[in-house]
Image (tube, rainbow, N blue to C red; front, side, top):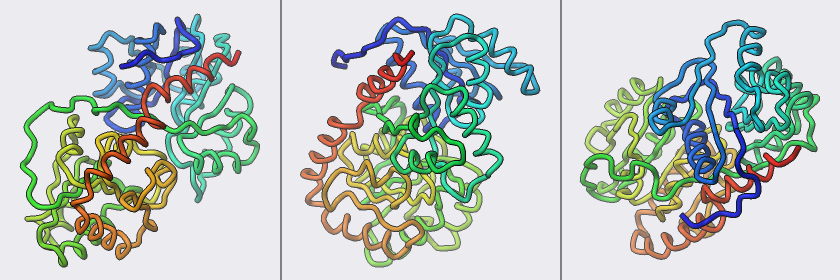
Length: 365
């Protein structure tokens, strides 16, 4: 990795999270911790619920990872207040971590308190939840970061939100993705789409399968890989069988080596109805994949220019299917598209750019 211009170094930085399971927010924290240590800082992680597998990964790499064992808000604040003494920057990730971490950080005398909202923060709002977050932003946070402009706009609309202290910083991703060659990958047959996401309602896997059914009825060589797990996996497996797609759609479950799947596939797809900026989309871009996503959250904001990088209306099965067929029909243009995607990634979405943007915020006080 090339040397980065990193304006603030040698800081003790505490990341507050609910847990460090496998997911985009968690990968964000892991990546930022690694870069911060590389640049001379001392990052640590404090988990409110449980440590999780990615927290264990950080522990194996020598990062301090602490589990908050208190129960009840006042007890949690008190335990965190003690743990955060001497910390220069507290960085809270999403609502639960901000509600617990930002007041405790101020009680501990931490000069800089940053929050990142990793989701879209979109209506319909849970008003009690969002009002509480607005007050945390107003009273305790130095700045609040949204991972896309759409999420920043949503946050600024919240009642009592300090609009002038809310900004957007797009995520960055590692290239090649971590654990790129962790295990043997399946042999690709035909033109293969890949979706990397949690199987949960906001990702709308039913629309993806319905669109793929339409597209594959026109071209029998199309295939779909779904990488990820979640509460909807049983229903997705059932729908695959009901649609007769068992020989064309493969569910791989949760994998740590998603980079290999992205590199082997022909096109990245994601059908989300609610989204910030998915790490998988940025990783796919870094590997030169054309992509078809929905016009949700930050996904269209980060698309490279060109007809190979398409945002379709969320929930529109026909538009998704048509985009899939266009991508497959123009597969011969893949080398040109790959060059555009990689250039766009290098210019705007590297981990180094993201870390430098946050470092500038860390120097606020």
